[in-house]
Length: 113
Image 1 (tube, rainbow, N blue to C red):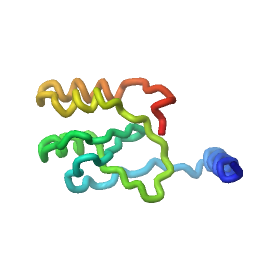
Image 2 (cartoon, rainbow, N blue to C red):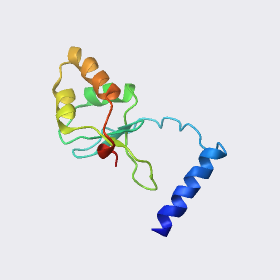
Image 3 (cartoon, rainbow, N blue to C red):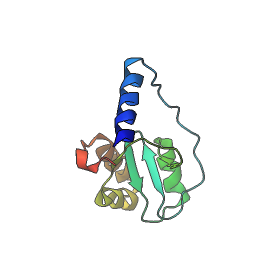
């Protein structure tokens, strides 16, 4: 409880004094393994289906990166499984449309983790 209060106060001070900086996009890593989590800005997607190298290259070109969980306190909106399935099973022609819908969707606060 005390830790949460201190963390919240620290967060507010960082906002007031403009300590926050836009994080640079890390370089794309190797293709993630089955069950890995990838992120894009405030979105988090779990890869519960195996992906091939072409799909991973396509995702990295759009800014998706593997999630480094060490010392990561950021909160993400979890992309629903149905949307992930639709994206990973889409043909290359449909993929862009499905991806755009995922990125532009307004997620509920209950999906924030």
